[in-house]
Image (cartoon, rainbow, N blue to C red; front, side, top):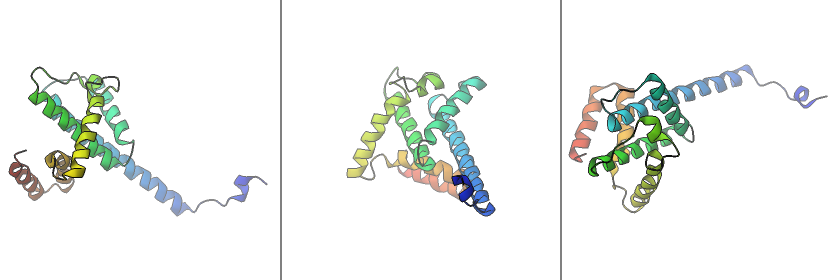
Length: 167
C-alpha cells in the first residue's frame, strides 16, 4: 500500500476554500500592485510616457516585492520607500528617478534598492518616536482605504488629515 492510498482525500469543501483563499490573495496582490504602480508613477514620473512593456515589467517587480511577505505590509513598505525617494528627489537638486525598470532594478543601489536603508532608519526612528514621518506611513493606508470604500467622506477625511500635517 502506498502512502497516497493510505491518506484519505481532503473533503471538497476544504479544497474549495483553499482555492477561494488563493484567488482572494491573488486579487489582493494585483490590487495592491496596481495601486503601488500608480503611486510610484505619480510620485516619480508624473506625466512621462512609458511603453506597455516598461509598465508591465515595473508592475512585475512591484508584484514580486509585495509577494515577499504579508501583502499589506510589503505594499505599505514599498509605498513608503517610494515616498522617501520622492522626498530625496525634491530636496536634492539634480536628483531624479530613471525609467521605472532601471530605478526598480535590484542592481541599482541609487534606486529602489537604496531606499531599503532609508526605510530601516525611519523604522528605527519610529521605534523611539512613533509620530516620526507619520504622514509617509499613513499614505498607503489612506489610498487603499479611500479606493476600497469609494466614499467621499473617506477622501475628505484623509485630505484634511494630510493638510493638518502639512504633508
